Image 1 (cartoon, rainbow, N blue to C red):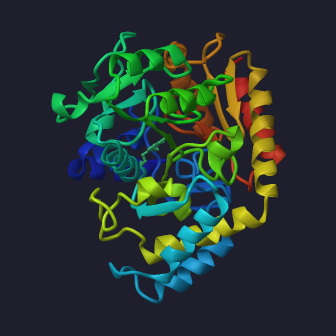
Image 2: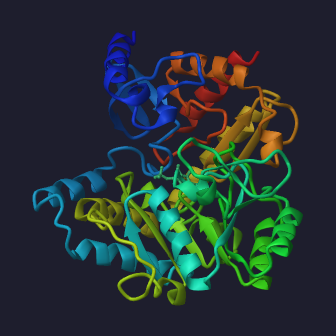
Length: 419
Ligand SMILES: Cc1ncc(COP(=O)(O)O)c(C=O)c1O
């Protein structure tokens, strides 16, 4: 029964565009109405009609320790009694920044913001301010939030200037964004040649996770590092999904490639509205009030969000078995899903099943997947109490609260639905 969810959706549609505050939540591309969530604990999420689901979204990644982790909850509850927001300097923001800078070698300085979108937008401004150049390179199919210059359409193979991907984004805002093909170093090299000495930075999801999970090909990230160095451009890893998840030091540590700047999202606030960008000291020293790159925020470094982040990140730092656990659960899920005969990509605790039998190594491969079949399977999974992202082009996220039995149940449900 999902009567209450349906009723709330109808009410929501009258007062919010599409009934939601973020488009994918409307379940527009699947054959099911959205579930309204009331509460969550560990790896389970409960809707307003009292249905329980195994949660493979985990608030889109950050719940590495599961929902309502008792230590995070206790610390946040304590912090709330002291006041919710001051718009002033606080101890927790210094502590969280120290925790990160002292333990991730490529993050020498960091600035807290409020979302992944804001982190990326600000990192790009810093890169442009530092280099004095305008152009940026991004990859078709990589998502970096909804700021104007990153919301550009994939040109059909011809990697030229970007076209706005949304009404309201001007040609001017998008024209400095150059599009390359993920896992294709030649496409990057060509852009650098064509726009010599004009490219400020290249931004990449080191593991693409917004076209479904697509791992970097062998040598791809190293090749990007080299091309950036040869062309005087900064390399930015967008670790909104991979940061603290693949390893404490994110994809940079996992693959052993050092970016100049890195962006984080919800993960560093244990799921609260947080983001951050950081990296080389000489670049970060360009940020206001030290330097001329302006960037600010009333809510940035909010004490409750910082406290949540400290409570989660301290646990990730002190208990390295977290990564062994989630990576082995992720692998178990991926190996099981492969038995359906469809293509499965996996890196650590990130997994995608694509409804195609061909390899998926690029955006062009990913969009060949059968999205009608995805939609059918999605509805069947929900019926069986399994909550996955309502899009073919997202990841399944596991956290430390999953058991092997629950993953086996998930695999068997997929197999039944795909028979
Ligand atoms: C890689 C990546 N970058 C940036 C963002 C934007 O983050 P936010 O939704 O917090 O603005 C996302 C969102 O999931 C993302 O996956």
